[in-house]
Image (cartoon, rainbow, N blue to C red; front, side, top):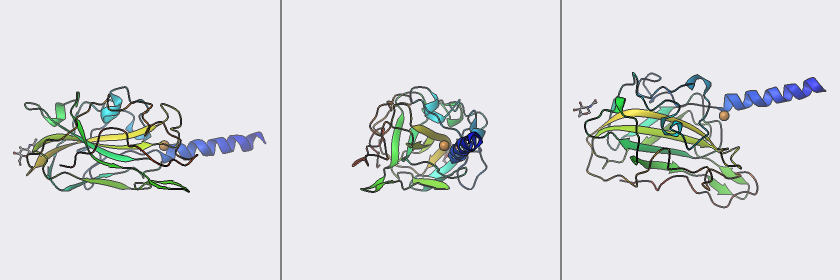
Length: 229
Ligand SMILES: *[C@@H]1O[C@H](CO)[C@@H](O)[C@H](O)[C@H]1NC(C)=O
Ligand SMILES: [Cu+2]
């Protein structure tokens, strides 16, 4: 009887570990070539505090290290690969931050009120439950607004897992930051601008929520409104 219980527990742990994921690359490039490597990336594990620097570009991701910067045309689509797939339910969001004059993406930490959201997808809601557009995705992509000013940016992908989010601090954040150089841009003014940490609170309605029961009738994405360009 006891060994059966242990086997069941082990099975649960394995399922959870394999359900973790990471965004290691811009599709078509090498892992960590244009995406900032972060500490413990091999575990695929999440960030769980919205109140530390880890929420910005993952653990120790504030330093570009040997990461390169990829030219991308404004208005084009950028895809991240997923290792190995989006294994938990929750929203997918993308943010960007423009590298200040005189700095370059590789040595900029992304601190301050500099981040704007360019994409966020909530669930499809039905009386039977919530379904999430990014569920099981092996790549995730976003179209850069065509009025984005040219120059260097950090592009931050974030998938938030909500399976254990009924208590504050239960949401899991899967995050990577790519370094990109936007070319052929326009003269938009991206905003509203927020900081990481700062943009989220552990009790935000989109971060502290039981997504299973009772079935929610609405879902409010964490963070600012999307800038549409
Ligand atoms: C960004 O693109 C511009 C326009 O092509 C180019 O002049 C500049 O050198 C690029 N910067 C980087 C860091 O690649
Ligand atoms: Cu997981």
